[in-house]
Amino acid sequence: MKRATEEDLVRFFAMTRRQGKCLVWTGARRQGHRPYGRFTHDGKARSAHRWIYEQVHGKLRDDIDVMHKCDNPPCVEINHLTIGTRTDNIQDAVSKGRVLAGERHPGAKLTVPFVREIRRLYGSGNFTQRELAEQFGVSPSTISSIVNEVSYAIR
Ligand SMILES: [Zn+2]
Image (cartoon, rainbow, N blue to C red; front, side, top):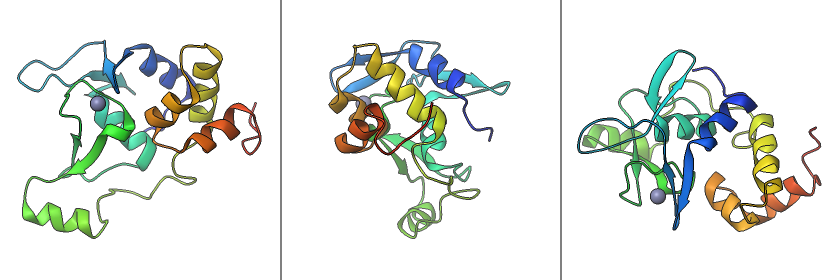
């Protein structure tokens, strides 16, 4: 899995719209009864919610699903996504934390492109720090230190 660049994240979040607590995909959707967003990255069309989840948490094993706690298939809000289960076997892997196909992303959630994208979104004036915290699955104090450049000295 290729890591997202800042440009990828800008492109991704440009295809979303806040709808209540959900961040809903406005780009292409998969046909059928689970209308997941479709996002093309590195030449491959992917489920948008799975793509963003893997960008944050690391590449998942193919037999692990990314599910919606909000039961809203086009939602891509990180906090509304969770890894799920098709069989008891997978439930076991999930409970033991053996779900990643590769290594956990170093530095976990907030890589440079994410930090830049958070600053850009905050700077747009369209999002509060609390909304960004929900969207990126981090605490409001983390967002605060990012937008105030306290602990993330990245330009
Ligand atoms: Zn949602």
